[in-house]
Length: 444
Ligand code: NDP
Ligand code: 2IT
Image 1 (cartoon, rainbow, N blue to C red):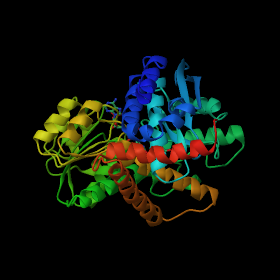
Image 2: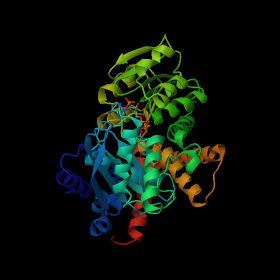
Image 3: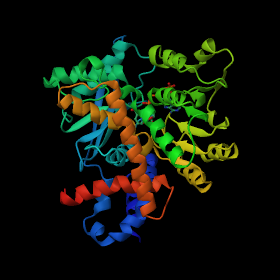
């Protein structure tokens, strides 16, 4: 059997009940076929792919916490330290009831290649818990975060593993976790990113993932003779990534007409009022049903449905596998020209294939949402030198990183005869740096 097929078969067999992890591994390894072919003997001898798909370490722990009524709850915490070939483990913490080991492994695996593509010295990791922050009081969230960190703090540090935000983990949670880490370890260090500005956070980190998504989308469109200005854009999600994607899209002259949350979605033909979404979701932690109070002409629908609205550019920014084959067919029928992933793996494999076969420009999340972790690495730099950079300085670096990243994946795709296939380009370009570092460091 082909080496790639052998490794995929082993991953499926040895990691049962982890479909998202299988999907992520399959998508990367399929892209790597031509590279593996060139080096098959050496890679096989060094078990290179087996080492790539096995986390260096995975930590699973109990997280007991007490609610406001004195009731004790027990959640499960995870940190998967996937690959440290090019730098300390880096990646977010997801707090969502759907979290399990397979989801954290898929996210950690993607993070290896994403972090490599930023050009910055960060390895891949991810963590989280099945804790649901929704409907909890601030004190309950604090109790959870402190208990979570009381165990996690044994495994992380500013030079070993630096977690950050993801779904359900924002400024509030990072603050509570940082406070507990500092207390337990007696260290004021850059162990987390996405920190508040008053204690070591970086300007523009909050905006970075969404802004970066638009910078790379703008560059891709420009290289294909198109301008983001004047385009109609559909967005899913209404969290950190979605909000700042909408904000930057509007700043660049596009019209954003949809956003969504886990219970429903909004269609606003006049253009989404981003300030209203910030107030509803960021400040008040409410549902998008509130949106009509701000914009009576908008429509609210229960369930999912943003991809049925005709658009030029679609930006999935909520969660994995939220854009299916049926959605892709509808998008193509309605004339979409580009899809760029703000979330991690939001497009199913079948939908990705369909979009690419129909000539749609498609940017995979590990390239297009890399602006968040890239800016986290800039936060680490600022923490190391005990300095703060201005918003414009960080934003300018973010833009440069995203533009360079586009050309890097474009060049890698062309080199392997896959011009315009940014999935292959991202996987190959991300892999090349990691494999080089792994090879130079020996069998570890
Ligand atoms: P947030 O928690 O801020 O927002 C998530 C949004 O997606 C919310 O609108 C949420 O709805 C919705 N959502 C979450 N889970 C589901 C689900 N199962 N079904 C439907 N809707 C859902 O998270 P982020 O914006 O930070 O993250 C969004 C995506 O971007 C994730 O895939 C994350 O991994 C990825 N990402 C995040 C980065 C970051 O810097 N934050 C960086 C790179 C990627 P509701 O409000 O109802 O919960
Ligand atoms: O998926 C991601 O890249 C993130 N959630 C951000 C990780 C980080 O370390 O900033």
